[in-house]
Image 1: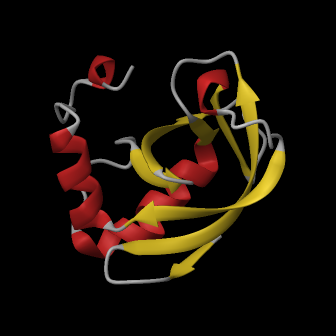
Image 2: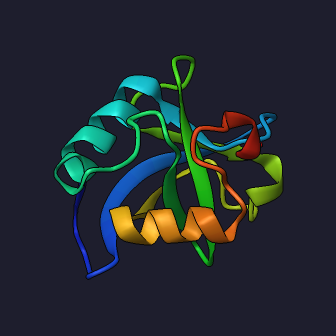
Length: 116
């Protein structure tokens, strides 16, 4: 799903679709698999911690949700630039970069309500 791109990011391609939800999400099984495969060796906090993806110019915390189809990233309608839904390149922050971005945004590890 994702491959090495730079020192800070992996690159992947997902179907990006606007949604009425407040927090971006991918399919829960995909979320856990990506966390385990890409962050597992780096000792990431928890497999249910948000992934941090970069879509266009902005970083977004991404949770897992069983209702999202596999291979799809659903984003709040406010993120829709008029070109969605569409298949798009998405950058996934590597473990250390993701932790840094989450801290900057005020995410408190272990506090899922801090994501919304």
